[in-house]
Structure formats: C-alpha cells, structure tokens
Amino acid sequence: MVENERAGRKNGTRGAVAAVLVAAVGLLCAVLLLPLTASTSAAVREITLVTRDMAFYLEGESEPNPTIQLRAGEEVRFTVHNRDPGFTHNLAVEAWGLETRYLKTEASTTVLVRAPARPGRQVYVCVPHEKMMRGIIEVVQGD
Amino acid sequence: MELDTTNWSGEGTFTQTLIDALDAVEQVSLLRVEDASSSRSDVEFNFISNELFLRFGTRDRQVRAKMLGIVPVTRTVTEPAMTVSDLERALCEIDEVGPPDYADAGMLQYLRTERIVPPYQTRGYKLVELVRIYEAGSESRQAPDDV
Image (cartoon, rainbow over all chains, first blue to last red; front, side, top):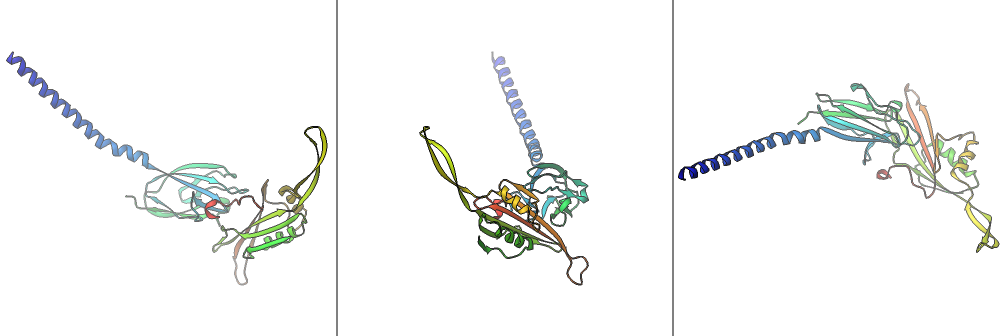
C-alpha cells in the first residue's frame, strides 16, 4: 500500500514536470513566432496616391506631388486613383522600370513594389503630364 | 449679367475670353469667378486653374394640368432658362471658345496649353490654363480637403 502511494506520488511529479515542460515550449514558440506573424502583416505598406487637378496627392492630404519616403527594402503597395475629370493619368518610376496602365477618370490600379536596398532618390511621374505631375520617392535606411 | 471677380486674381487669358463669351449669353444672369487652390508654378510650367460658377436666368412656362384630376387648369412653372448642356452648345459656336475638353451634366472643363518663351530665352515654360464652369449651387470638383 505504501509502495502504491509512492508510485502515485512519482507519477504526479512526472505529470507536473511534463506540464511545465509543455508550457515552457509553448511559451518559447509564442515568443519566437509572434514577432514573425507581426512582421508579416506589417511588411506591405499601403500608399494611396490620388490624381486630381493635374497633380499627385497622398489620399487625404493637400500637398501636390509630395515627397514619399520609403525604407530601404520595404515592400509597398501603391494604389493610384484618378479623380481628375477628363484626364488620363498613370504612375511611373523610370529608375525602377515601373509604369502602371493609363487610368481614365475614376479608374484605379494597384502595384506592388519593393524599395531598393540602398538609400537614394527616384523621380515618380505621370507619363502624359510629366512636367506637372512629378515628385520624389526618397528611400532611406531601414531600421 | 452680374459679375463677381472678388476671388479671382485676374490670371488667365482664356478665362477672360470665357467671361466675355458668357457675358454675351443672355440667359446667364450671374457669374462668379474664383482662383482654384490647385494653381501652382514651377521652373518648367505655370498652371493656372480657375473656377466659374454661374446662375441662369429663369423663364415661365405654362403647364396644363387637371385640378383634382377633373377640372382643367393652366399653371405657370418657373424654370432655368438654360442648362449646362445648352450652354455647352452655345459656347461651341463661339470661335474663340469652341467645344470643352470635358463635359458632364454639371460641369464644363476647358484646358489650354501654350509654350511661352520670354525674350532672350530659348526654352521658356509651358503655360497651362484649366477652367471649370459649374452651375452655382453645385459642388466644386476640387477635393474637399483643399477647397
């Protein structure tokens, strides 16, 4: 009977140790994997450019042809929305070989790009109106 | 025609041409001219953007109807003497104006571009004039954040 009690206590201790081990492994996984999931959702930055009055604007802002700052290597999804009645616009960054299709009024398009790994400055334009619709994309050192 | 240019800098040759043309259209009773906030200039261009808000005069029209669905009566209905589409047609016939570059039910839009080369310069700059005509009371097509 005493032996049975000892055996029961032994089994209880083993169970507790196993539970602690499982919890520790779970915690370790959470600590390691959580940043990965967070960085995945934050990896693609959304930038919406609106074209109106023969200029680019960041959505909700009033500065024409603004300088857009990106981090080196950052992945960015540009959405271009043409709100200029009667004009066809697009977005092009020659240095990146990027050029969207031409957008009629109220049309929009999306393009996914990765900023260059090195800091620098590139010009973005609307090809048919490149004198007036021209701004700078500034790539800065990432964190 | 009543003309209000208090919010206009006076810039824009084609805008002045339009004002003169609208002055000759007798159905236009009021015209307000304003600088648009999108006007801007750079080394290679000068972008002038103006907005014209106009009100048409009214005319009375007799409409036959039946009171209580039985008794025939004639009612007088007051309505604008012109629509934006009518105005578009009227302006098309003026040589100095011609057809708009864009038009819809509430707006006529004209774009004029010209390269200006000042004396003793070789390249000059591009003068771009954008004029939008609206019926007074309709909303400007400028985005709300910069109106």
